[in-house]
Image (tube, rainbow, N blue to C red; front, side, top):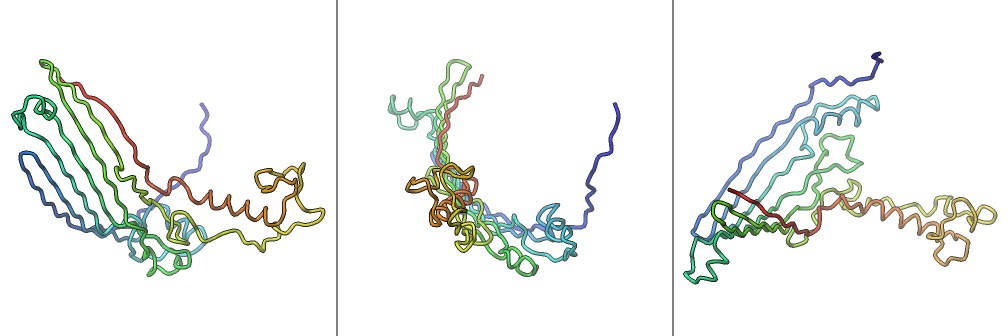
Length: 260
């Protein structure tokens, strides 16, 4: 089998990062209740947030990449985790039917709260002192897990129900650097653009290759200047309000385990 020349990329390890922090944990255990609260305070500084950053931001344009420390893209100063577990002991109440319902059952609540991640506004890209000095909104989430087990001789059957994002929080994962928001980039189409001012023979009509009835608001077979601009504006808004800018909504999962 012939071997053909193939391009490859060689990486040089010239960047570095330093991560420091501390985690504080408080845990309380009771016969019915278990609680665990943790807080993490951390810093992530370095000269590059990922392997290709300097190449695309500087070297590709012929610039020299400054070796300056800045808060990295994954720098998150504050994180809180809370876990609450309710696990009734065997025959806790002495009431037959109630003990049957509570034995081998458990309910866990898991909560998270943390800073948003840093980003850089476009006009601040040239000055390393301003890199990642803006913060996206705080992030949070609450999950719940309930389990119930049954024993049949040596076999134990457990049913599991998970409710993820219990509060249906619209967790923001990404914001546009130009606006600091997940649903707008502050770059709406310019109404002064000549494409919105086509008149006479240049106006778009029914039958033209680019005519789209969805842009023709009154469906008269003719696209006015306002209709062309409004259709472009709506497309821009729909394309930037991207579903992946947010965390998943509330959802449920059911399952079971068999042990012996």
